[in-house]
Length: 292
Image (cartoon, rainbow, N blue to C red; front, side):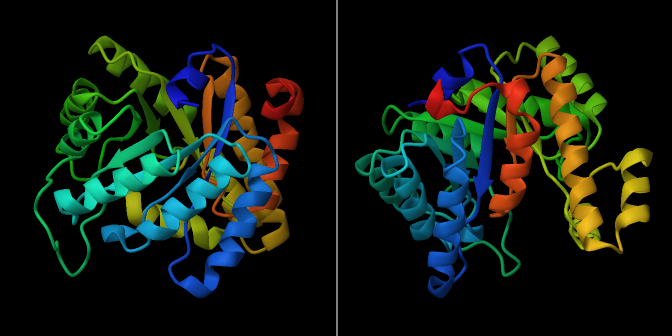
């Protein structure tokens, strides 16, 4: 099923993200975690793509297993920053052959050792390529706080509009911890004529080390209320995990109450975290997808 149709049903949706292993010996562990999360009957799941496409085979394998064995609509990530057109064509053909209908088109991070190919400069070019390659539902990323490489938020929104005009059907946000940032962003992009569904990306922070990595990578704004949680519970792993999940659940409840129906949880291959999020929203979301 195409994700644009799921998002168009006018009800709250919950999806989870998993990432493939970096090495083959970890594949079974990751696959088992992904299948446990699939057992929660999310509306869809996404499978990320390694920098430079290094784990692309695992991305396709896990996405196909979720889609074909567990019947969970699956969104396969695809990055292009170091990919040739031939490589992208091969991946798209394999996705199509294995029944994957949804692709998240990303530029991707430039590898530390530099690019190995220069066929694509921007995600919008990859979107155009996917659009011409078959009947895929195409997602893209958006950045409520602005992409770190954009000069300002207006420039970043202009790039988002290029992605939409290239053919993306919906966008998923980078993680954020203050819902007002998203509400302001939604107002600004709607004002610019961007009307595709926006799925809110939520990260349940389960350790103080995790939030330090997040801030180093993306410079995400941390509201004082969230900082207080980290300061109070950061040295107590069990308490930090419980508090982080509770904070994420409260964020989601507020988003749904304010009309943001698409919720995507960066579950980091942790079935217990996904399960606790799903349980905390059981009455708000209603029955799991499989029982609707």
